[in-house]
Length: 249
Image (cartoon, rainbow, N blue to C red):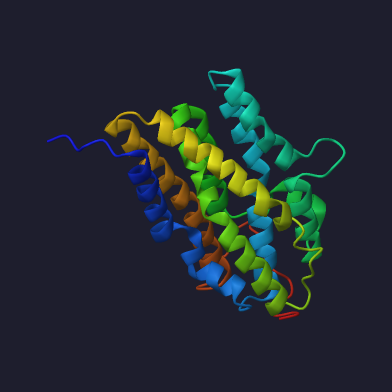
């Protein structure tokens, strides 16, 4: 028997339930990060690997814009490129993340090179970029809906890191302040789009699957960090090796 079509509100509730179960704020690595339980080297590893994810966001968004069927939709999505790449005057999210990486003691050129990132990071992020490039516009938009859950984790992260790590300042964490307004704006737009455009139960199921996939991308990145830098500390060949463990904690 075919399942009944969800109402827009039921679809939203199902999406939010996925976040409650699968969003990466539940991961042990994140709990340690926010709880002041990591050392400087582990935070450096997080900042380095997360940079690769940040750097690929405008690339995946540009590929999505190229496939969007209307000028209205393309204009609405274009703000995401400016948010991350900047506008040539004000810095964007990528530049602010580089400042964060420098603030925790990493070399800027090394971070930008992506030479030291974990294979898990590269595979997960590249899979996300390919997903957005290859799947339907509806699925690609739905995969961005992890932004519905990010404002809460951002506030928790800033408070926890300032409290837990004396070498981290508000300037170090400047990346996050604009995201407190950008992420809800983007999530509201994407949510309205999928609630309108997912007109069949099959389309609704693809929307839900896309969000599960994206939560898995974020979770896998933290799995890699935990296994390499927390327990059992199996750093893959060629990946970043912290020089000074335990400083400033």
